[in-house]
Length: 306
Length: 272
Image (cartoon, rainbow over all chains, first blue to last red; front, side):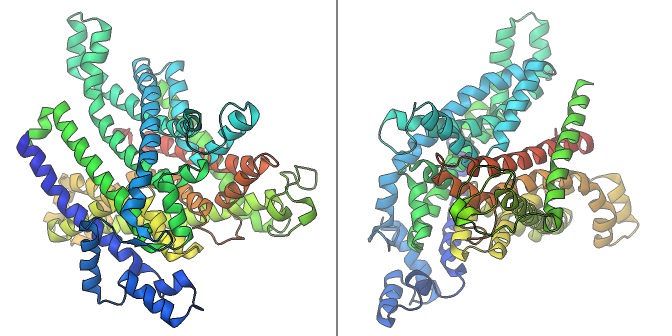
């Protein structure tokens, strides 16, 4: 087990190096002069030079790259132009809000989709199954920026149950959680159903049934546990997708997390901040996947032996 | 038997929805619609009427015309990017999967790197850096989505190359290119087509997400994402501004998802 985890950790290092390199190169994809893009071409020459020095853009490429790594290790992650502060501080202040929303949405999505998916697989081909499949399809086809305004229209403006947007109380959390959770549960219901259908067709399920085991044991102990394995991977992917999609969700609900920070960063062309947020989310994602891999090996010892 | 029935329904309903949207996108310039950017400031956000069946939007533009032109943009950008990225994926993926060796290794490392960025993160970051324009949006979408097709094609190629007919072609001295074009590509078409259908839905979602964030089509271009963003500001006064492009977007994506399901049932029953 220990060697397995160590091997996975080692394998993540080149991926992280690749991610950092690509994020570093991001600023160099800007067509034209990044400093002029930020300050406008009418800016004073001295201001432009100052900015260039501040961002390290006056240095040769390889030194810029080293500087980028140095900034990561000294805990600043660069300097935000718009906020005049360290990028990492800005991210850390806001990450809690994003994690809270993502966690609640993932929990709601799981709570809805597991019963729906398992039930649909058990009653495959019936009306109940078709309903679940339909629900999953709708969940997958309604983007959050369509879902959210309609939910606001209904529950905030119509019924006045929840605030339209903002942050602070539990009531503020409800609408964004429902919208995100609904989007997730579409895809998840489908995955749980497919995986469960596949598992229910296995020989060991037939054996379990033929030896007269009660259906609930067959379903939850023999089938669901095995069906969970591919679903865990999807959950990891979804958490990553939630962090990336935060830029839309948080803009919609005025939620003070890193998604809104990202939005303000590209509105003000704050390139170091853009890079910082992209780096933070993608490294979180690599680590989530690493964790999922390890979790996988706990659920399924076959993985460790490969 | 029941399964087959559902597949057929998916295919028909999905095909009808997508077919309708494609007709709208193709025919829009020839329809007797109001000019999409013709302004009518005194009637900004007016509700639907005989003259403007879906109402008016920001600056009093005709929503019906905006939504129809938006369909053209969404489907155009989506089809363009999906076609180009799947071609890149087909070429690179089948070559790497058939030849193996260092080319395969390099390709898969690049694919892994692109997969290390979750969801729309890389798309948004690249679009933010390049600036809003239709061309940049296409570049960003192709740059981030070819890897998915390459990975799929490579996987299928890896299993196909062990089949007898490929080995037989190889034994008769056919060149690698000939084997790829004549023997592998025809067999890759079905899974690729299924993936492209779902990919088109994804691409349309990406296009409207970018336009929603102000990173896609430049301001003034009729696009569903931009309409949704404008509508969200005036939700109380004019909810049709959100509902109209919202329904268009959802029906299109729903149609593509249904069509993809139906096609998969028909063409590629193994991967269901």
